[in-house]
Image 1 (tube, rainbow, N blue to C red):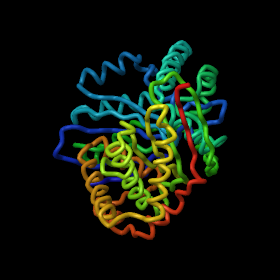
Image 2 (tube, rainbow, N blue to C red):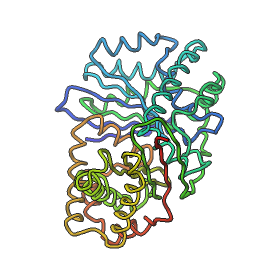
Image 3 (cartoon, rainbow, N blue to C red):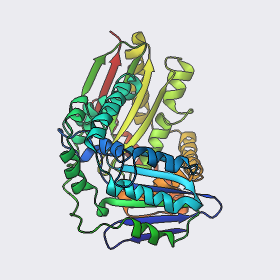
Image 4 (cartoon, helix red, strand yellow):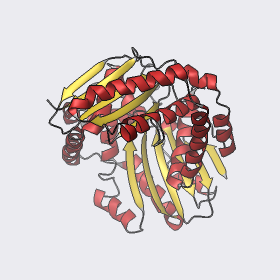
Length: 405
């Protein structure tokens, strides 16, 4: 059973009861991410995520860690381009402690100057690790190629320069503008009743908060540009990006089907042709990133340097053939059933349910049932799919390449 409450302070709470489990997963989601950052403050959302674990007025960072380790619980966080999430999974008997600590981190973190300088080094090492992982950093390069000067082009981690320059006052000002209750959704899934909503509301009470900064970034323009880099790597890495659709677009489910057929599964065209038949890549796949007002369909392949442009041509040919000839009947039926199956299987995880409910509330303010989701997939028409395919033009593709010299 799903319970929802919009509190008088603007915060929203969504709780889904599952009495068959002994755990509770709690996520605090804040509607801010790297998309909301200026160029000078790039990486501040991710840095704040780190700093919320570094001590509050009531607990040291070690005490936060020990509190969850001592009850066999888990606590973690992540930052995306459009939101930030702090979450914990604990036994149902410890849910009150979990929300109290999460609230303490959110509302009473000290952002100690010494801890900030130490944590900057941690984030710089995280950036180094990413830069040493070409099949990771290339996706940031593709975003830069596709979105140019728009905030969606900037890396979530920030750059070494911007992270080093972050000041304590920058954090206080950013949180005052974005970390306000109107921007927050608390998503709870597990063995908790609706009465727990009152506990959450009382624990996350703040007086005299400022209004959120609702300016946000403008809708991005897609650019079919290319960025190439050379690195000392064994493989060449390739990303191709096509303009996608936003999370509220009626064609989002059609895009899911296109992605599934193209490179979203082991039976997909890219996987079967380039890996299984040609043996030219170990890793090749596609995925679609849906933002609030736009999207990006990405194809990734890793191959040897001497095969890079052969693989690129083969990918382009496969995309062109799919666009011109459409899906086969078998692909059409199988992709729908696969999407429905994957979706239903994901709902067996309380973490997945927590994330789904939070994103639905934070970005869509609606909570379609499982039957409604299955119906939406079934209702996708071939014309919808072809509309998506028609946008996959060879002169409308952004490209990122990392290859050895």
